Image (tube, rainbow, N blue to C red; front, side, top):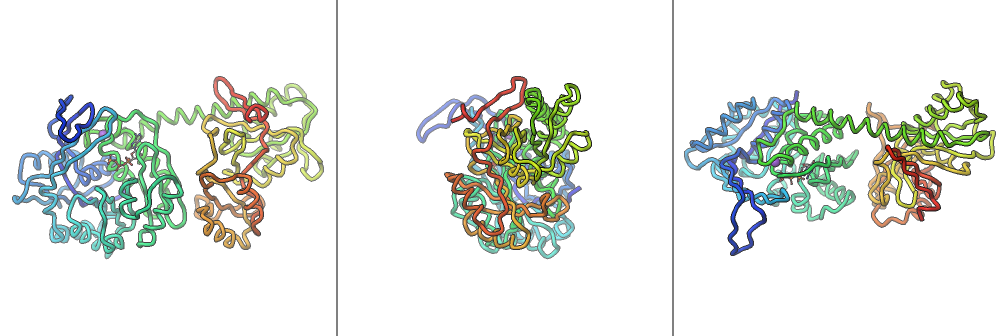
Length: 540
Ligand SMILES: Nc1ncnc2c1ncn2[C@@H]1O[C@H](COP(=O)(O)OP(=O)(O)OP(=O)(O)O)[C@@H](O)[C@H]1O
Ligand SMILES: [K+]
């Protein structure tokens, strides 16, 4: 369980539900008025972390008033440690006036009140609890001097610092230097770096700008699209869950608190932790209000259970596509067997048919894994070096565009797959419904490089804007392919000429192969209760 200290604001939210926003000078009736919900970015993040199971301490300043008292009671109910909370007679508990329109968008006015009275001295008086934490999180609804004080203490004691730079404003270099992890949304990122967030490439540019200020991890949340992460070693985009948003208030706060509760200190589970945080905030946006909409760990896990169901559906689609194709393979041929989970369904399905119908089919495998599976099943295997051609190859694909061009190599078998595909008179790809896309822009493309000199290729890719990252195994070792090469994942730029990109990559000394499969697939079969077949002749 992670030990998290949140230093930040507490607000009482006064929420107005409106049909549409009033223009300057306009008067509109409101649909409903909800008195006093708990809110404030600090409080929301503390609650999100606590409800996800983190041991959470909240350092905040409340007014000596009724709002303050009711917020305090709420924190206690969420098992937040409030021993380090401060009160003042100088100002009232912070308040936010929030309007939410029918689409779920919000606009907010904030009265800082007691939040703006939280001083560096207040924070320093609670040094000991920060020093003992795993990580400390702060946002910008309290004076910067208080945040800097908290981060200085954290740095002295090896405690990770997370800055949620919201609401957006420019920040002193000193604070950025003390920050380990920064978690802006699109607007906040642009305010701090001057770089607009448009796609994954510009997110990486944003990340680079933050790295140059001494920050070691950048997480950019992009609302209903999802969230992006980058460290100097790796980056990725984790798409949001598709849900019907009612009120996005506290989405970002839920994301950060939930993430802080899950992320290992070495970041090793970053993608899983972000998936969890996406799930948590997808629940928040489906409920009106702030703190009342933040889910507990049980609720998040229950929602995940439901999508395991959709994981099952994906497996079913893969199997449906595999069986559809297996049933239509002609007799007396040489058959190429692809690699990966979808191809494995095909291997099993065609094996069943060969046995039952005593078919005369000889096979060629595209990876060591497939070779082993086919041998275990007792299929007749040929050495690829002893034949001139393969009649049909059936393989999976990572993504396929409208022209049946695609990317393969997520499973690290791209070289052998491409060798066999090029020998095949016909190539059939079997995929589940997630794989077809209009274009390959912004997609991750694996490039297989020889280990000797791999860094040279990496530098070339980096200097030419391809945002390369070596692929690693879960244990932290660099991933090797069946032929002992390394994989570098790059991002396909927008408006890329795929043919030129393909040729250009092949020309680089040290590049063995890449995962762009252009003009190779003759037929794509998409699984589903109604199997869909797209043929190259029809796709143009
Ligand atoms: N409409 C949505 N559907 C599904 N998930 C969403 C939606 N909006 C937000 N999320 C989730 O919440 C995360 C944070 O959202 P967002 O980027 O809007 O943060 P934010 O701007 O800080 O939010 P806010 O200020 O409203 O709390 C997203 O990365 C995503 O996982
Ligand atoms: K909400």
